Length: 403
Image 1 (tube, one colour):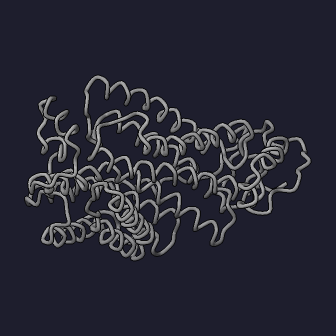
Image 2 (cartoon, rainbow, N blue to C red):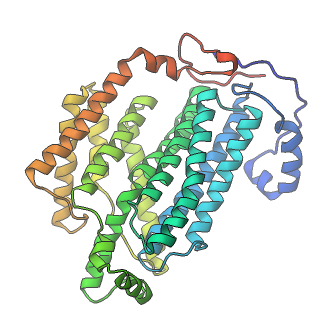
Image 3 (cartoon, rainbow, N blue to C red):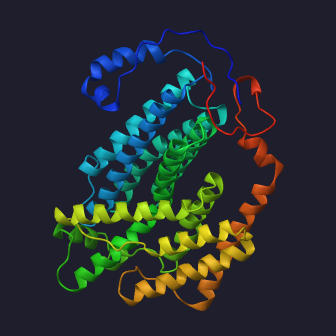
């Protein structure tokens, strides 16, 4: 069990009895929180399980706000011109503010993190905050830039992935084994996978928006179409801006590979399936809500669920990556073919050479992951790294050092 550098004792007043009580009395909550917990400390500072749950519940809440905002934002962009202060952006920004506050809190106090988790949180937040003005400038220079695949957007995804990796590490290192540890970990992995496959939503919305446009019942406002035309873009170029091989390749090499890692890290038999199923249920709920208030619909990436089931089965049977990769890719492409037959899929390039290359890339990534898992350096990296380089010889099994 890791032990943090000793810190001065603190008199801790009684915490709010529940999250509802804390939210109903924010001023009283702040008066309790600030003198009790906002005190200087170092990474690895002793943290009780109750305190750890409060911290990482706030992380879940922050990323829920970010996910809701970003989901709404995609649909918004297929209806209206971009606006920096659009409601989806404000909702996403509210989540970002909470994330920044949590990172500052852990940076100052040292609660709930080791040095590596904290550096990941700080680094990811820095990348994300740098990407925000870069994205704004990019829109000013390049105009519409509706695509999810722009370099400035890639920085946003990268920053989010890094900060989430830090949150996953911090929680998994210090949370006590049990159902709560698994539930929160799966929640964090859900946000990680959602961020990983987020760019594919462009094609998932674009295919239906283009179909509606061609049928004479466009879901886009005329000002959006006029602005795109003034930039020399056709509806096809801004609704489906990337080649048809991108969607399945990204689904495999980003989405399903993330699920492989989630399954290996948590050790839960159906972790990949559970995360994919909850993600798709969330997407379906958002679909219903957005369509109900007049926003454009999307297709759902149901092939992700087929691939996730295959991932769980492959990992449970301890198949090596060089064998599991082609099998999971084949299952995913087969599911895609069935979905394409009923018009529930963005364009997928099914040419044999493209499918083989995509499957080979996914297999290579999975095989590389196997090599990393077997390495000694990974075992050392997974162990808590606290102040003064304190690193136990064996990776921690969870449970924060207590007072």
